[in-house]
Length: 265
Image (tube, rainbow, N blue to C red):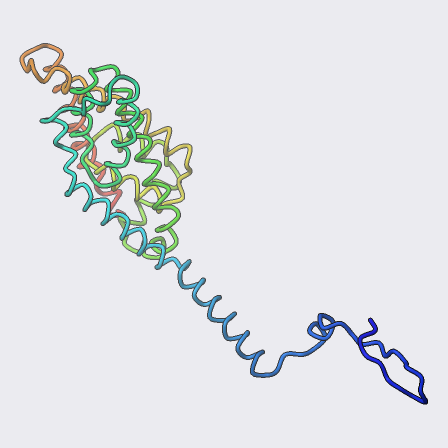
């Protein structure tokens, strides 16, 4: 590039000069500039490590769960049993919306029996059962994913107690069978089973499949009870209440007989 000229003996001679971009590329940074760049890079790396650390992710999980529980206290979804479903929604759209709300409510610690009764009361036995099961699997999947991504790395090193190690080993080695038992025989809270499975090494597919299959009897009983709540002396309602009580009693007996396994004896 001919950007400068010189005169020598009356002759004009062009002197080539390097472009500004080439000069900027070849010029070296001053020590102060290099220190500033290194400081910014190091600070960004440290901030990234802190934000992605196991305890930071666990803190985020706790904040999300606290926010979910607070939203339930504010909006009171249990009013569906007394006020009914909004008249603007009906049919399949109402079932889909209720299923999604069901899943989110289970993540926010709303008891499933209450939601199952509402599903039966709002949609009848069959559609209520299908909607409640879909919401059950959705809520379990959300809780399992949150626990696995945000809580597992921080909580696994804390599994030092004998009964915690026993529960973790049972879920890690025999996840499908253990989760089926937890869903079939009520006793372990739904949210607690979800997060315990997430902290263990149980896989996604066995967890979701065991949740779907194991939740059918109990969910069906509550859905039928909700659909027949207006006739509490009807055979369907009484049979449903029997199916609710018997698994709970059986679960208590099994837990009592197997308690020594959780104590590590």
